Amino acid sequence: MNKRSGFALVNLLPFIAAAIVLVAIVLTQSFYVVAPGFAAVHLRLGRILNTETQEGFYMKMPFIDSITKFDMRIQRAEIETKALSKDLQTVSIGMVVNYRIEDAAGVFKNIGRDFEKIIIDPFVQESVKAIVAKFDAESLIQKRHEAKDMVVSELVQRLGSKQITVVDFNFTHLDFSPEFIHAVEAKQIAEQDAKRAENMTKQVREEALQTRARGEAEAFSLKVKRESITPELTKLKEVEVKFKEVEVKLKQVEAQVKAIEKWDGRLPQVTSGVLPFLPVLNGEKQAAA
Image 1: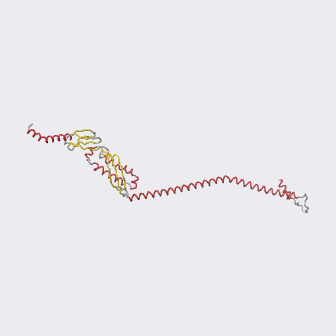
Image 2: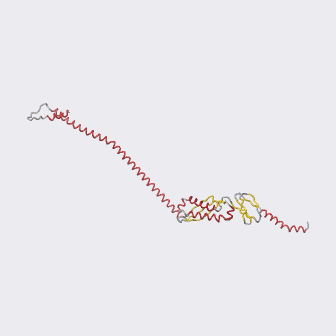
Image 3: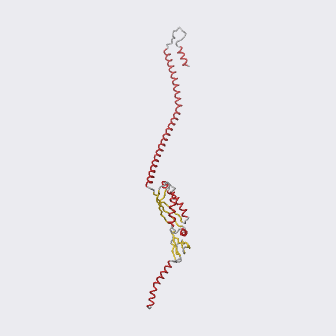
């Protein structure tokens, strides 16, 4: 090789290297890879040709076609906001939204790559503020799951129209002012004290009713016993009266017997026609009768 040809070859080396680089660039720009769980929106000069959702190796025209990839798996968005409750209490709210893109081409065409910043974040904040405003601060604490369901229902409808599915939604925290927390605690303590007092009142009332019931039962029992004993007492009194009558008659008979025992058999000498022992004899006849 002469000097001239060698010099020419040296001068061509930069061009050869540039050509090799250009070929490599063209080759790398001629294909793209779709990974599992992703979708690729294939554009040519800004117009959507198709959307590849199956993982694999795909060809494209270099420098003319462009590829925009979307993660089709479940994604997580963490959002912080503040809202006012129905009773005008400020609530600091933390939320987590799990979502999934259903139509990559539709999202890219209507929203773009920054869909989370453009629609998800503002939609979630707006829906949460609207729902929180329907609850008093205290009821919001007690009905947290109910508020969550209402937010999910609204987000499903709003984001669903944008080809985004809400998989799950949760409040990570609901924080109120320290003054409100102290007021709620004081109210709960007062309610507990009132409940204990009410239970004690019910207990005393129940004991009083039981005591009254026992007294009424004992009174009824005594009444039944008295009613069962009264006929027997009446018969006993009748027997006592008859016994006294017999006792009186026995005393009369004893008196007459003693008078007869003392009589000597002689009649008294009287000038009248009345016999002194006539009453005694009459008594004997009555006794004999």
